[in-house]
Image (cartoon, rainbow, N blue to C red; front, top):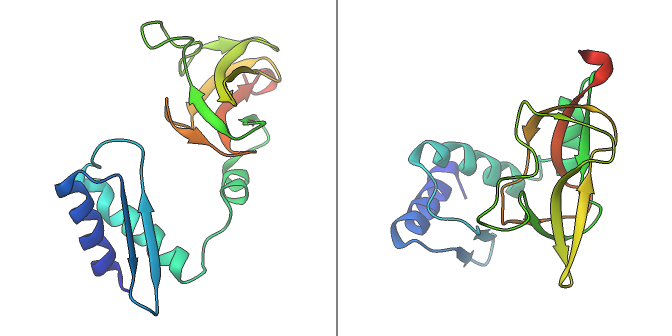
Length: 155
């Protein structure tokens, strides 16, 4: 399956506002799934390229890819479990942390809900939140990067 065909599948998902699409032509099996609304059209080529690479067996795990980006002056805060990721204690409240905000060691950054239990994700070290790597209200996997923090030594 080429990139063009994958782009067409993603466009079909967007047009019909589907959250999942499965195609099996006997030779190739592809499953697309998302938990949010339609993607902007600018994301289609990137998404199609990633799916093509996946089908060709050319991708690395998300952990390995994330480690490539980390320099010695920042660290990743990873999910300790599989569950639903929330940036705030409730939908009508402000997020625990925002990009650019300074955090202290042990400070709550987010919540991962697993088996109806809310588990706080805390800062492992003091620093500044540089990036939020997971979308609010989405499922995260074990060891998935959630935040990037610039450590105190880098500042």
